Each structure stands twice: as structure tokens, then as C-alpha cells.
Length: 428
Image 1: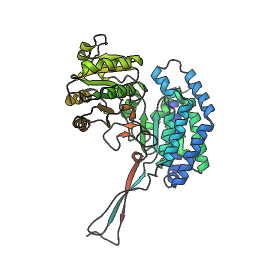
Image 2 (image 1 turned 90 degrees about the vertical axis):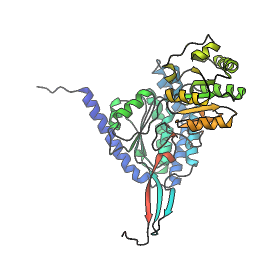
Image 3 (image 1 turned 180 degrees about the vertical axis):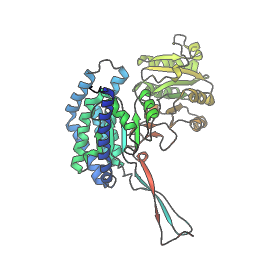
Image 4 (image 1 turned 45 degrees about the vertical axis):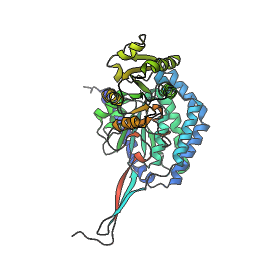
């Protein structure tokens, strides 16, 4: 009697074997990378940046193939997937900016001496092998590779099936940098295919992978958090708010909100809800809506906003908890800072919020009252980006309460150990 094979089981076994091979190679590479001096790591990054520029035509062709293979994508998803010469140049610049940053490994984070003469030092060290699972945006692979490499941690990249060709072309440039620097190619590995079983193998790879970082939609992050047997550094949805306080400069409010919503609607730092004080709403809200409508934005508004502009579509309670990632803006009228904070607590995802006001006291009360990872005063929520923070790049935006919050750069990709220096002390 012939045994009946289970294709799903076979796929899982193949994926597990591939993941174990990549992870074991990465752990071996970690012993080299964790002790690599800064000039070696920087050479890998600057060479990879030069390769991105030299292979730009190849990358664009690969990206065109990805776009052609997925005609059903939403506009927001297509925007995130699309590469242009400017975006490739931005990737290259990002690698060079990471190279220019100080080496985070080996930093003395704190030092103190006890009464018995023992000297204690807290020293930054690499996390270990990192698994990066991301969707749609091919540049994430370059950013993650650069940050993990500089932070001394090998990384296993698993991009989305829509970006398979683009990710492979970018990975080839990273390998050029590793070879030039004499570092193991296993410092930056990619999944062999887009089989979802590989993701499952990564999530169960306790002892092989030290940290999983998911970057993508709610479905991906939820799956990772539910299934992972490995520590996870994750972010929730980008339900970002811009609050226009009664003390706002009206011209500033119009300019900042237009950028916060419409610069790129498909990024997680895009404002999804406008909160505006009742005292200024009758005069300012029509101008704000007019500005955004001219840019192609649609709206979902509460009753108070519709009392001012009856033509606005009515918002449901669920709309205020929706990350649109599209040219759609929720609008709610509030009664001061505490009312705005209450709305954010009920509907937000603790990502990024902004207040527009000339009243310093109101601004400080708003910032102090937030539970979100990032709060801004008189600036666009789209500044929530590692590059804008001076991190060179980011591996994601962390909205949890442990280890790291906000844009995750080099420092956040390190953990620490302790060095204790004595002169022969023994414990009584």
C-alpha cells in the first residue's frame, strides 16, 4: 500500500529545513560580525550603496516585473511596492548614512563603582540573529540589512510575494558589499521563496532566531504575535491623529495637515484622523477640508463637523478606528486637549500624534498626556521615520511598551551585557 503524502506537511518540512540551514549559517556568521571593526562594516555598506546605483536598471526591471504580476493591488499597496530612480537613490543614501553613524556595538552605556571597589560597566552588544518579515516595500530589505549589519546582528529577510524580484535584486547589491568587506554572505540571508511555511518556520525557530521583527499590515503582525515562539518587536497599525488646537496658527495648520495626510497616504505615519477644537472649527474646518479635497482627499465626519459642513459623509464609530492608508480622512470636533486625548486613547494605536498650536502649555499637556510612541508639536506626523530622526534608516516603528518605542534604529537593535572589573575582591 502506497503512503499518501501530505503536500502541506512536505512544504512545512522543506521550509523548516531551509530556515534551519539559514539560521545555523547566520549564527556562525554572528561570531564574525559581532566582532567586526567599524571600518569593515562601513565598507560593506558603502559598497552595497554603490552597487544599488550601478544596478539601478536591473532593480527597476525587477520591480516592473513585480508590478506587472500583481495588477489587482490597491493604489496604496502599489505605491509602497513601486521603486523609482529617486527611491533607489534614497536607499543608497540610507546605507551611506548608516555607515556614517558611530558604531553602536561596544558602547559603554553606564559605569559605576561600588563601595568595595568593583567597577560595573553596562556595554552594548548585538542582539544575535534577527528574522525580518515584511510586506510590499522592497526598500525595507535594504534598510533592515544596513541596520542589522552595523549593529552586529545577522538578519534573515522574508519579503512579501509581491516584491520577490525586487527584493532579490536589492539583496544581490547587499551581497556585493559583504564580499567586498570579507564578511560572510550569511550575514544577510533571504527566504528561498514566498512559501508561507517559511514564515511559520521562522516564528517557531526558538534557539536559532533571537528576535522577530514584522513590518506590514495588521494581518501579518497579528499572525506573528499569535504564533511566535521567538521574542517579537512589533508595531500596531498607524492610526495617527493631528489635533488642531484653538491656539493654532491657521496657515500652519493648513500646511501641516495637508502634508500629514496627503504627502504619502500609504505610509504608517500618515494622519488618519483630524481633531479640531470646537472654538475654531466653524472658521477653519471649511478651509482645511477645501485644501485636502483639492488634493483628492475624501472624508468621514462626526455630527459636529457635519453641522458645519453638511455635505461631508457621516463617520461610523468603526471609521475612527480604521487605518485607511488611502486619501480618506476622519474628522472629529473636540473640546480642548483632554477631549482630544480621550479620543486618541479610544481609537488610536499608540503610534504617532501631533498637536498644532502656539500655546506652549497646551502643547506640553498634550505631549505629556499621550501614551503613543511619538508626539509632535507643530510638525507633520509623516516625520515619524528613522531617517528623519537621524537614525540613517529604520527597521520599523515600535509601538509596544518594552525595549524600544518609535523608529527603531541602531541603538534599539542592541542589547547589553555587564563587565565587572575588580582588584581581587571576594564576597563575604
